[in-house]
Image 1 (cartoon, one colour):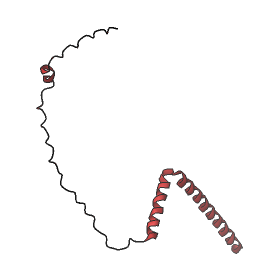
Image 2: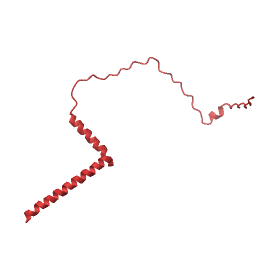
Image 3: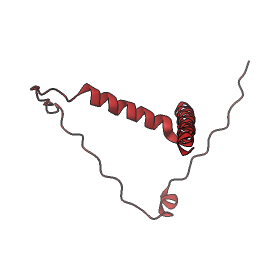
Image 4: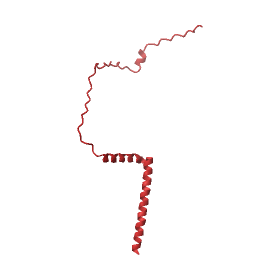
Length: 110
């Protein structure tokens, strides 16, 4: 009798295991497709790493070195005028000239 029970138990364990794997695959597919908790981004990173692994290492071959040489400027550097000396905050208003009054407009004749 114990021999008959073991195959049933193994079958039920297999069924539960396959059901759990299937449910996990469905949940993982949903998480990747909706990018839940960044799962889509992580999946894309994994795919690119696998692609780089499959592509193999970069071949060893000599390349020309990149040297960037710029000619010296033709004109001299601009001369920066010194900024005016700082004053107290109220000093600018006291030393400013009085504004001139604007002339009143004259009516146009037709």
